Length: 314
Image 1 (cartoon, helix red, strand yellow):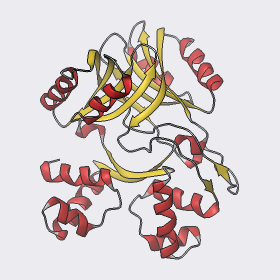
Image 2 (cartoon, helix red, strand yellow):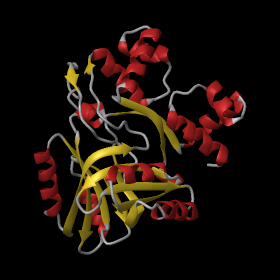
Image 3 (spheres, rainbow, N blue to C red):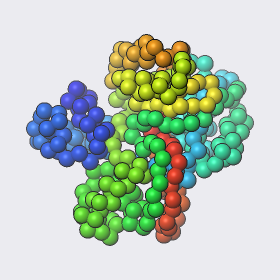
Image 4 (cartoon, rainbow, N blue to C red):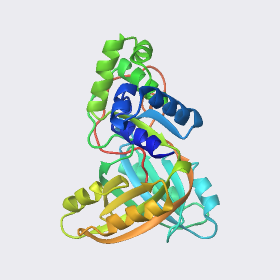
């Protein structure tokens, strides 16, 4: 991607359904250029725009990050981890731990069970777990508390947005049995209530990513605000465990990634940083209604409340 492509992706990160006209005005290019560039990015598979549903909506509001030390090669262990249903993300990394993974489940007990299964896998030497206290920034998925009563029409809209975040309101309305105007109102409500976030998901081949475990000085909330404002930070969480904060830094080049990491290290509130680069992404599965309480049969009404994230994994 060149600078214009990156600008369009950044704008879609603010509003994945931003119109061609508004994208053109914000990027300083023509609507025809916007249309051509978006079509090229989408057709090439470098970027997709989709709705990502809050984990609590699908009954997976308890999230834990795990770093796994291996005895021998990391790849066989990573492939075994990828088969576990509660493990939604697996990456082979540099550093003291050869693998990073994320567990997403419906209860603390279920997370504990997943950790026990990971520890029992052949080749696993030890596991370091970090529980998320609160997600402060995510690259695509909704953050904060999500609370809403969802009906069949809402679920139909969410299913369509999961496959195409820029689907027209006419198409969304047809899927949900609503008029285009009613579909628009509902989609805006679902976004405002943090039930879904619609934005670009960039191919991992298009960027460099680094995980950062951060120790802070003084108040954690104040330190988190400083880190969140740093350029390149795409994910940030307050954690319990080995670190006060867990972050992901992303950049288009290795040199830019080093600069972004140094910007975090240089903050007055940061006392220390441990980093690990992602070498190979083995598994990434975004929050999907197919994994939730609506995966079989007709949808019912459910209250979604909690905190979680879906992408931008460290």
